[in-house]
Length: 295
Image (cartoon, rainbow, N blue to C red; front, side, top):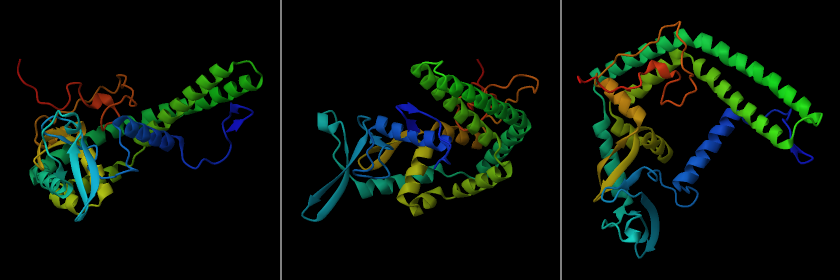
């Protein structure tokens, strides 16, 4: 709350929790960085498709013609004379992406391998979660005490405005991180396995699932599976899977299902470290999921 030119912690019930607010800010920031402006000309493939010739992002555009409204994707490099690809019809590119999903379907054997690997992860996380939750709750208690002391110093004019704002921001960041830790480690693992089974069932015919999805669902599927899809002559000619999806495919193919489990007496690395898809970094070796090869 702003009062007298200063910012104070409000006592009212917030409209959203701090973790959700920070997540929204991160998403908005990511869109600004990528140059997306979905409130102008929105298309669910924007940000996911790139030119197969020069590698630049494909731009969605619309134009009125004699036959009505025409939609197409054009390479940003063409505007600068660095690409020879012509404009791609939107419907043709959409159909090509649908067809590309057929290559991402998993067999029954691959789904069984993947479920076994994830189940092993969940069992290990359950063993370590209780202690980490208690640690996070202790951090939240400490931050509450620090916040009270900070406010008291501020009211007594014993702290500068700059330092007050800096400490207030630090406490907020650490509180959000601790709350995320509690939420992440407090997940009902039975529900996780149910969600996993539902997701794996989709991989039986993921092309059909994608084709039947709405624009927003398609956008989320594309962002979850692909870092980029490369288009040439209105066909998907290449691309890059997301790190998480790539690792899951490696597990499903049985490249290396050995999961490193640290000794319980050893100190577990901070679960808040930025790793893809896991709360506890040490459950995945630093080499990732790739297979071991002899020197």
